[in-house]
Image (tube, rainbow, N blue to C red):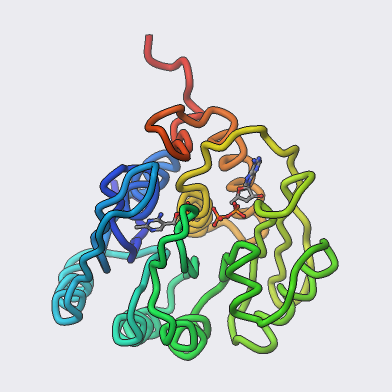
Length: 266
Ligand SMILES: Nc1ncnc2c1ncn2[C@@H]1O[C@H](COP(=O)(O)OP(=O)(O)O)[C@@H](O)[C@H]1O
Ligand SMILES: Cc1ncc(COP(=O)(O)O)c(N)n1
């Protein structure tokens, strides 16, 4: 049997809650075979990032070549991409594949550690966004990339539209986790504006939510679902993952990737 497959191109989180580790755990939950190309290694836990080591670009290329010569890729997700050169390499590779692609433009960790060099911001719209079916910024990322302030749902809709019009992606999902009240996300697929709404869960354990959400969307696209259907399924998945998140570590604890299967193993 040939399983559905997805590739994450992202950084490693030694603490296991975000980055590549969150991505592969999430793909597994959707019964999608996960593959990973590492861009950077972070020495990280729930409290923050101690050190970062970037994978040299020729080795990034070697990983991409290893996938390409041997393994099928049904969908792609990108996360931490620190340098302009890495963005160019990854963007050119993705552009040649023409597979469903979810771009999570991670810039800083929740604890405030930068994961991207400043000059890479422009490289995102140059090399990555044009190939993306959907870009998934949180509010601070959307504000930085668009140079606007986002405080209301109307602002989120405007931002989603601007990603497509000005920054060149085919779609945008603006995530409202950083606003107050309900956890509302706005998806624009280039034609229709849709809103996904869930009650806000009272917890500080949200380490890895962005990575998990983007990977769930990629896994659902790999399974052949449309973008709105993939987002709907993934919004439900991330909400349960936050509801059952783990009180691990003394910082912001990780989301629970197996929330949908709680109680299965006795
Ligand atoms: N406390 C919460 N309760 C319920 N959903 C949340 C909560 N915090 C974030 N979310 C949801 O989790 C997803 C990730 O959002 P967000 O926190 O904005 O992104 P990031 O992890 O990239 O900063 C979004 O669907 C958002 O609405
Ligand atoms: C290697 C790596 N990549 C991404 C994030 C962002 O995590 P989040 O999903 O909480 O925004 C992170 N903390 N570490």
